Length: 329
Image (cartoon, rainbow, N blue to C red; front, side):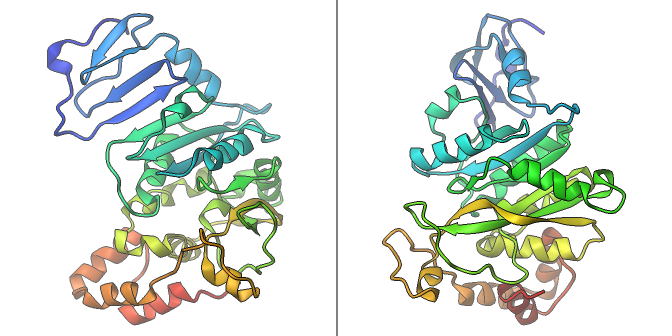
């Protein structure tokens, strides 16, 4: 469709808007009451901003990578205030995949304009959600589901992928009984990295799956909204909550046999565990007491709702938190 937005279609600031920026040339403001229009070279006034919207369709089609079989895969990366070099490393690792893969970055209230010029999808949320990336991760996943991608991977902004990560995930899925069509989700492996990119010899915790190690095929798309619905008070252990939920589902899982995810370790406890003094940037510490206190403060009804939002069955608070904080196979 073509044409300028009239005054009645101007979004109200009281409504939450998403701003999707395409290649630094097109900014589309999405309001619940406004249909997005491709103005084909015209200047479109929307929400008080002027943006050239030409070539929008062309760029979106180009950034929705497709492999030789016609399948489309995408990696979702939420970000907040990560340094540009970390984001650049993340973006380059997805761009360099041996299987054509799209990349969607979702800004959690602090968008970085230089990303507009990258060959990625750039989604801007208008406020900070302070839930360890769960809300932007969930928003990105829902967009990818709506656009009918065939596979959705997750990657935190300070991590990066080996060039064969997506290929390895697809190969693992193909090894499932009945082939890839019967695989729902793939679990990749990670290697721990210091800030200078050297390998930190920290062993992976048995049974744990880091967020960046999940790769979902269409049979598991139904669980992806739990990233967004999970209570914020559980976001510090969001990957553990999600993994516990995933294990409770009757899904066909496959595992990649070698590490393909590079995990930038900022947990001080990991450095101490291998006899190293944590570097200044390794400031992450898990406050287990805070999670226990919140769980124990819930009424039976509040606990029931929290567990529905997390996709978990009912447990007494102490049992629940202990199981999540100390998961084992």
